[in-house]
Each structure stands twice: as structure tokens, then as C-alpha cells.
Length: 123
Image 1 (spheres, rainbow, N blue to C red):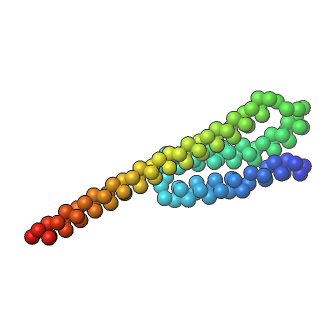
Image 2 (cartoon, rainbow, N blue to C red):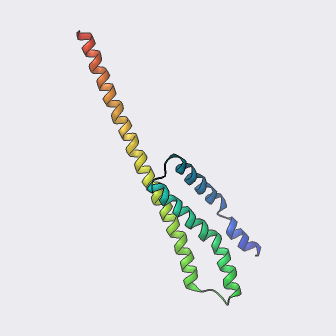
């Protein structure tokens, strides 16, 4: 494998490491559909990124590029990125709902404390 193929394979490595760390830590807290979506997306992205140099090598030995193989590899990569983004968005929506619910409960507790304080002053 020549150096340009190696650079192609290792260029996105920091991004992939960050994706994998995030998905693994998200999975430790809860394995929900958002996590599954992120995991499938990261796996697809990883396979397409590291499979790309192999495809180039095989095509060089096998008589030249085949457009459908190139399109398939790019499609897998884009679908993986889309699934990862969708999983992150689903997780963000869930976290937003949770924080809204926490704020709502805090307001209820505050109102109850005010009511108890008024009742104690009146008694």
C-alpha cells in the first residue's frame, strides 16, 4: 500500500476516535434507539473509511475503477454519517425534554414551599 492510500485511511482517524468514544460513553448510560442509531452510523462510517483504500487497491489490480463500487462506498459513508447525526439529534431532543421536566418539577416544589410557608405564617 502506498503512502497516499495510507494517508487517506489515517486522515479521518481522530474524528473516528471521537465518534467511538462518544458512542461508547453514551451506551454506558442508556442503550436506547438513539444509541443504536449512533452505533450503526459509526460502524458504517468506520467501515467505509477504512474500506475505501482497500477498494482503490483492488480496483487498481482489477482493471480500473468501477463507478458503482465507488458510488456504493460513498453512499455507505454518507448513510453512516446521517445515522450518526440522527442519533445525536434524537439524544439531544430526549435530553432537552428531561431538562424541561426537571425545571417544571423545580417550579412545582418552589410553589409548594411558598404555600407551606404561607400556611405556617397564617397558623
